[in-house]
Amino acid sequence: MGIPRNKNGTIDRNLISKIYIVYDLKGAPLFVLVITTSGHKTEAATVNLINEIKSSNISYEESTIEEHVLYYHFQLSNQKSINNINIKIQRKSSLR
View (cartoon, rainbow, N blue to C red):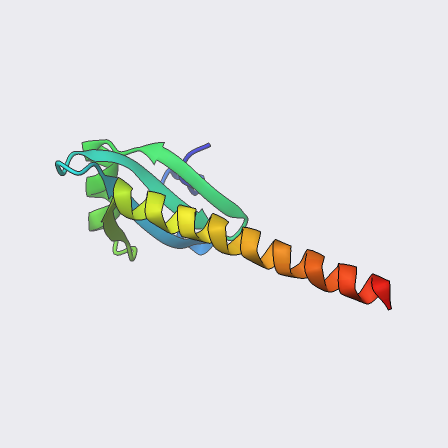
């Protein structure tokens, strides 16, 4: 599934929270990541799509794949830490 669109084919900005145009480390566009109200969607970053986003007055950020990998790595690490803390709390309360 790609970017949410209206019936007339334009990008549906009502469903979009954030758009990232993601580039490789050499500056070549890889994909567009769209955070929506119901999750996230990705689509190949074509020249036409990038131009449509830039000219559509929708807020977007440009970033590298490395930034996204690091972000999701830290998110996963933090979630594992939170889960471990919750397990320890549950074990302590069950011992009482």
